[in-house]
Amino acid sequence: MNKHLKTSIALLASIFALAACRQKASSGSATETTQAAQATTTAPTTQVASNKQEATEALPKDGEATYKLEEIGKTTILQYFFKDDIIYKLIGIYTYDPKGLGKSDEEVVQFLNKDQAFFEGVTGIKTTVENKDGKYIQTVTIDYQTIDWRELYKRAPDRYPAKKPKPLKFSETAAKLQKNGFVKQ
Image (cartoon, rainbow, N blue to C red; front, side, top):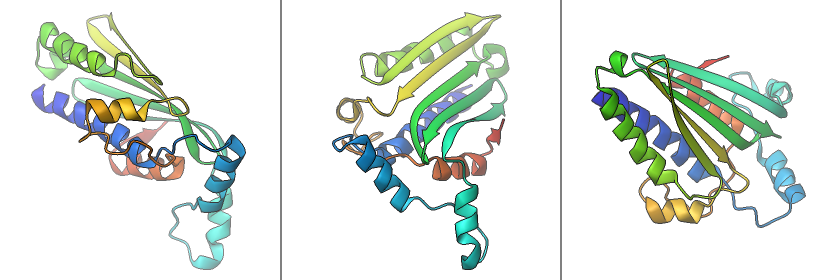
């Protein structure tokens, strides 16, 4: 389970680090942010340059997408909400099976309590943990429009190096998730 917990922590940290590198402070108006995002948004493509516009237009502008990764003893479901390729909300559901991880309930609870304590009181992040049928389900909701990046930086500058990160783009995030084994649902 140590390997799986470390993987889980690394995955969660990478998601937040990616977000920290991409999230932009909301100092301008929503219209300015949307216009800036539209001006800089590009879709990953392997097509020739003449077809680049078609690939960009095929990318969903608004909506939600869910990705899932199943590992031994752990399932991760990430649900993204985005507008004009900018992610504004993420719901992460992490299900831990102590037996599958080869750990005791107490070890899993200890890990989850530590994680809960880290995010407690951070504006824009809500976390809950419940025990259902012998499995522990942690739900982390991140509101990128209200998240307190300065507080995260203060708590862990190595994990959250930017106090005012740029917006997180869905197209880039989706490509990285699929590269890391996540499957779109």
